[in-house]
Length: 82
Image 1: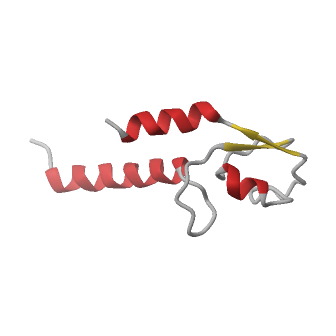
Image 2 (image 1 turned 135 degrees about the vertical axis):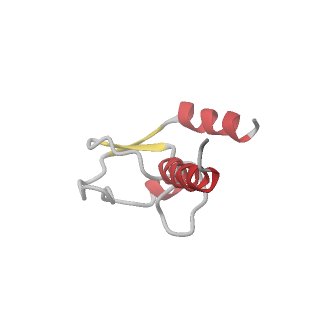
């Protein structure tokens, strides 16, 4: 027999990790991560927040271009509607 409270804790922790991967890392922003920084390739902010930054918050490389990741945004919309 499985320990239900322990299983709930494990699933809650996994859910929190997934939420961290999906949502913008800028404080107070609730948008989906949808922008890739070039040249470093980090994917950590929504397009609005990414376009406001000159340096990647992760590695501090100068941002030369912000590339929109539409597939990720579309996938999250599908998941939210299930």
